[in-house]
Image: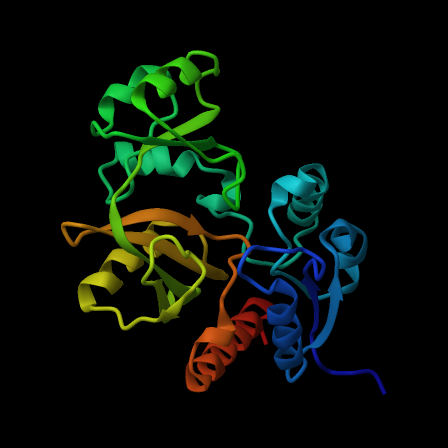
Length: 279
C-alpha cells in the first residue's frame, strides 16, 4: 500500500569536511527525525535538480558552500522556481543566499552590522583601525578572508574592481553568538566564549535585547519558511553587531543543545514543513 506520508528530498553532502563541525552527523540525525513524519531520501546537491520532481518538497541542509558547485545550484534554483517546487529554505532570501551585498546595504541603512563597504573609494567611511578584513563578496566559510593593514589594504584594493570585495574593520570583540530560528520563531542560542575558537560553542541564554537584535534581521529578510542563523559579535562596549545572516544552509550545532531544545526544534521544523506542504 503506498505511503500517505509527504516525500521530502534532503539535500546534503555527507562527505563535506568543515573545520570544527560534523556536517554528516547532523544531517543523519535530522533525517532520522524527519522520517517520523515524511518519506525522506538524501541526495548530493549535484543530484538535486534531477531528483526533485519526484518529491513534495526539497530541504536544503548541510550541502557545503554553494560556490563549490555554483553552476549546478544556479540550474537547480532556476528549475525549482520555474516548476514551483517547494524548497526549504525558501529561495527568496536576501542574505547569504544571495551573496554578501546585504552587509553593504545594511551598513548604508544604519543597521547594527560590522561596517562594510565594497568600493575602494568608500574605505574612508569605515572606522580607522590597525587592521581590516577583506573577503570576496561571493564567499563562504572564511574562503578568501585576509587581514591587512591600511597601507596593504589601499594597495590591494587598487587592483580590484568595485563591487567584488568586501572590506570591514577588524573588530575587537569579546565573543561571537548565534541565534537560530525556524521561520520567524526563535529556537535557541549558542556562543563561542573564546574569540579564537569559533566552533567551540556553548549554550547561551539571550536577554530580551539580544532577541530583539536577532529578530530585526529575521523580520528584515524575505523568507516565510526556512531555518536561519543570525551570527553576531559582542563588542568591548557591550553592543551586538551582525556578522552574517545565514539563510540557505546554516549549520545548527544540534549536538550542543539540551535534548528538550533539540526536540522542540524538530517539532517546529516538522510543523513548518507540514505548513509549507499545506498538510
